[in-house]
Length: 408
Image 1 (cartoon, rainbow, N blue to C red):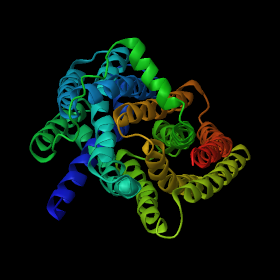
Image 2 (spheres, one colour):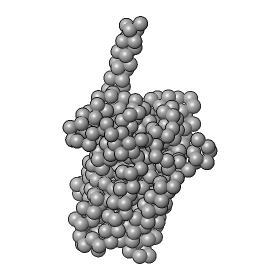
Image 3 (cartoon, rainbow, N blue to C red):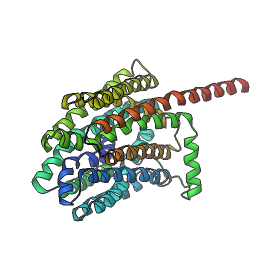
Image 4 (cartoon, rainbow, N blue to C red):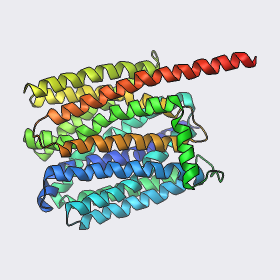
């Protein structure tokens, strides 16, 4: 692989990975306008975000077997086309329920991009380089929270919130063209992969039985679901509680993303001295402490705009070290079933994300307490899963070593 090929593959895979986050972040500044036009509340509009997460979670399970059965590119084409059509359909919604439904369809299409991207990392690069590749992808993904809210705010101000979805459709079209011309087919279709329900379920169960998968996929997903709580709660916290405008909201959202992006790149440097397992554990301990302090400050009324930003920034900084390493370690044991492992990991992440983000909508509190509590709770559960799961990983390694000794 030449340096030019390496660059373009990372770039296109990054754009694929960024499509779902961009779909989330870009319409956040329009929440107030959407609520006004559809005669509802900001909290009700936040359910369209939760429905998007549910759609992506379902789509993850759908595309995993398809990517292993038909190769990576054909299912990806179908997903991107579905995304484009449903995004354009959002122009015509007349109620918040219509938006919620269309966002589910849009998510099912868009998640083909993220599932295929993770599987293709496993296909195209050596397994020992996967964590570094995921960190590089975060550079492209990181542009989403920096650019998307600003672009979404400008589009909403100039043309109306509906045209945010037209812009998303156009972005997906450009990504589709890039996939066609710049990405090779990285996996030959495997006709032995059955698309019948029972074999698919059996395949997923086989993946789930791997201790390294369930430990790092669930720990990483729980930690990441704190980000979903932040994304869902950000319009309420910054625009309703602290009364920031669309432009200010976009600027703060972009600034906070620097913590996540910067630490995901520091993770690449840290891997020269520390193992991925060590980095995840240390980052989770710090993230839990951050969440506990955030809750303490929120309950006692000690938080303002600056302290809220500081707590969220530190939380996202920890996540920059957790996400790349967790993804790489979770899929490392798989080669033949990388598509299924990728989709199952994504389904876990988005399913937990949907559940966590919906918590913002169910709370009727116009304070920072719900956001702080959800961020603290998810990181604490992630740490518990990591500590317990690590024991099962060690036990499996010890059993395998004993078996190897006995065969000799």
